[in-house]
Length: 398
Image (cartoon, rainbow, N blue to C red):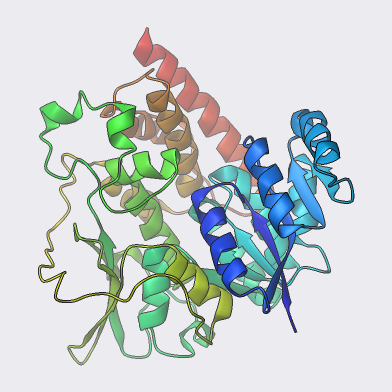
């Protein structure tokens, strides 16, 4: 029987890779709903090919979309709008699998809705888990949802952990013979830049990742190493492990996607060519395996694998993320909000690359931390932090 899939963020790189897998296995999966934010022409092409029953766009894009639908004879597709529309498709009774691939805090409530509806949720939106952490993980337990990681690193860790790991008690300690998680980082495009060079890098340079094809926000995060900081927080929540048991390892080739160390001295690594179709296919079909177009790793072509410690002097974002995980509460949500504002300011050339972590740190110092007792408190902290970060950006520019 075919499974019905909802893709939140279909026009992004993860959404596009997901469509590739679904197309390759059309006998197993069908597209029920897709959502997009601004790339309406791409959305129309996707609708022509995959014929979803529902699409979700911002309210101000509906008229444009309806015009295209009339021209293409796609009037049978239902159009929903804004956050209410995203939540409606994420929790829809006819949906089996939700690919959560909306970038940033905007993905939090739809992802949580999918979890509370007991769906199989393929988690590509790391910010949702960074912000909500324990609340999201508890909801997955309470509503019997499957929360499966799609980030290549977390998917690698998931593949290297012993079976039944998620059924064990969530107490921050490694279990079942696990001693440590090694979270790999490519180091981004500026791995060998000096501090002086980093001050002058451009958005175009920051968005040119050496190994992965990604959107602008995650590309900049990868360049500052904030992406790895967010992934560190995500790993702690997903695998119920305290941050002191997670070591970040810079591995420029992006062949080993992450590792798990065990008490007997074993280190298990998941390796593969850097292509998001692999972790997407793994999460989609787990515990089975399905074919992808990704070629198997040629070990004779990839003879050198390098590893080094991250430099938190040149890339302080990683240290900030670790500190917020130690602080707990609303701190990770504040960090995430400030970072989204700072990255947008950098992409708009309002601040320098090296000012991104400075804006984040100043926001963390300004906005009061508290216990993350509810989604409402988390969203309030997100709003307050964004406002504070925007003011810091304005002050820095004046």
